[in-house]
Image 1 (cartoon, rainbow, N blue to C red):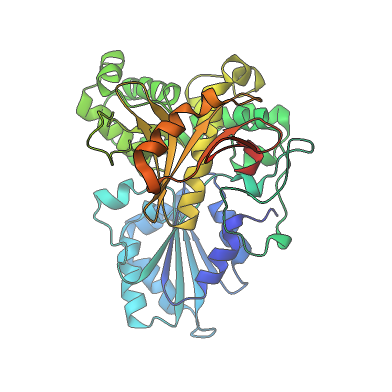
Image 2 (cartoon, helix red, strand yellow):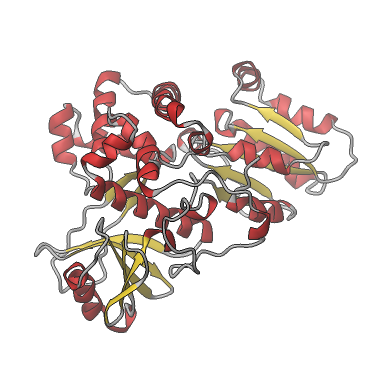
Length: 413
């Protein structure tokens, strides 16, 4: 059993008298993590099972009856519902039971999509719930392979608790991460099986899950959109171009992207817009949640050859996902990007507590002042708000390139 970074935090919060809602894409390890925390007296309702799902869809009142029939002792018995979005009516039942006797049951509802919940106007239990999100592995859960660089304190830190108890996933080098992504099941698998697992994920899980979640009128057109969205992942969204290539209207293209967000298959990174004096681009970027899944959805082979063909953009994509996941786990800050119409561009801006940290990503092993020029431009413009900038690259140790600009190895993010 591999230990996840969020596992300790989730276990701590489960002791608090609230309903817990846990969301994340399929195969990110939600159910595995939860089941590792459950005691023997916990009750599991698995709505990923078709017969179980059909039973509660036909008679959602059965859930409340089942909970009431449980012995009153032990108090705070955990009732875990997996893929809870499949039966939105269960959320109303949970509220009723919680309000009736909040000390008798401890509810944990897990889901891989917000789509049905939003369409059904599901009750997300405001004032009664904690919402948690689980993502593919972060760097600290899967350390760099031996000899890959320094293992010192991270300059862009992430909070850790009880790290000594962590059993890390197998160590990978950078190229392997860019080829296969960071889904727990893929990372734990043998190399010869990873590509097939990712293709199966795209075909059996991703496409079928979308079929079940949404009424897509033209499935062929949607599959063309999905492939193009994967191919252009990490770039600024161009709805007009996508519409022209797929034959889908722009409003429908936008709704398709919303569907991918609702199912936690991708994240929107907005453009920085804090300076009205500059002519800034305002189009957001969309990132697939995992590089391995991105390759498979784009019709590419998830392997090292795909990385060798054009590693720079994939490296930038990976760093963006790493920053996004950490900020979401920490529960503060945002990730944005900066680009002006004059060509000044910074890959990522981390904004937190009124401060902005610009981050450039370069594939180089030997960063220079030339690589820092856009960071310097941005920091001069922002003044005290942006006091330090970083270049994430493949150098072997941190390098001070200019006042307030440091190049760091990717292992030290």
